[in-house]
Structures are given as structure tokens and as C-alpha cells.
Length: 149
Image 1 (cartoon, one colour):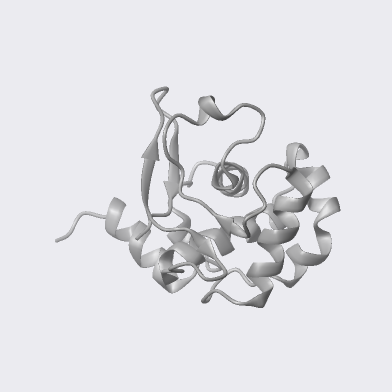
Image 2 (tube, rainbow, N blue to C red):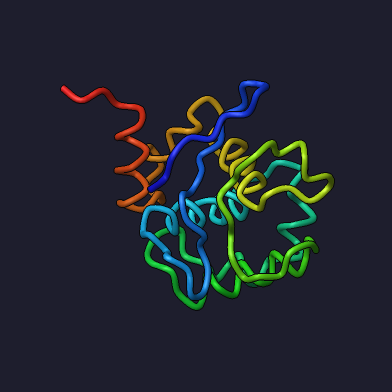
């Protein structure tokens, strides 16, 4: 289930509870958060992501912003890992520990959250307000931020 990860510095990230990738649990809301992160990477015009958008243009164009785990997301994750270096396990891992402890290669989900924030300034982490956000992740995000009546 999608949840909040906050750093000691007060930074907030949307996080997954289980790995997303081939042969992993692939809970629909976790998968849709990763999918939406790649959608945000593709759609954002922030200069910091230009190199990633250019290098991964093919897989980014092919990945859907919502839906279950499938070949498009598998190809995207693998291409992203190959581009960035580090672990090559074909999965996006939940953020844990201190992101500052991991040196130049942080959790993939940190970068995806940064792209969501760039795409939705003033709204992030309320990605449920985007029409491209999948139903399962939208429901999970709403449950975190909208009081029950």
C-alpha cells in the first residue's frame, strides 16, 4: 500500500510498501505510483530531468501512467537501472533508512517523486488530483490526505 516516507529534514515522499518489478508482489497501488512517477518524468519540463528524458525517451513513451505491472513497466525499470548504474535487479524498491546514506545513487523512487513534485508544484503529493493518476494509487493517496467524514 502506498504510504508516506518523511526524511529527518522534513521532506515528504510517496513510498511503496513492496518492491515493484518482475516476480515481485506488484500491489496495484504501488505499481501505479511507479507508473505515475515515470509519467511525471516524461511530462515534466524541469531542466534537471532533461538527460534522463532524452536517454530514456523510448521506454518513457511506451509506459502507461496507470494499470497493473506489465512488459512496458518492466522494460522501463530495466532501462532506468541500466542508465543510472547501481543495482540491476529489475525492481523499484521502497525507500528506507536515510536517503543521505546511499551516496550518489539514491532510491529510484526518490527521483520519481522529484519528477512528480516538478510536474505538480503546489499540489504534490496529492497526485490523486491528476487525471493520469491510476485509480488504485489515487484512492490510496486520497485516504492519506482527505479526512473521513
